[in-house]
Length: 57
Image 1 (cartoon, rainbow, N blue to C red):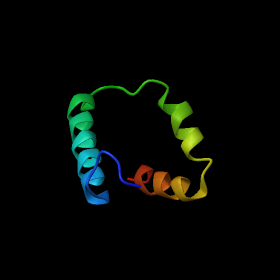
Image 2 (spheres, one colour):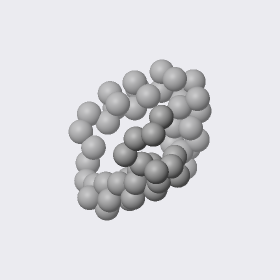
Image 3 (cartoon, rainbow, N blue to C red):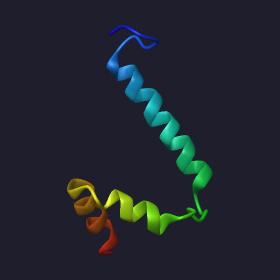
């Protein structure tokens, strides 16, 4: 459906820029309730594999 964005690529650009903005804002800050969030994400098999990949430094 046609919406506010001219193409799917433009949506991804906006999301990318917003994520970069949030990373800059949160850099060096503690994420509240991270253990709970991490466990909820780990319930999905695909996400769990990605989480484990980055936790094994």
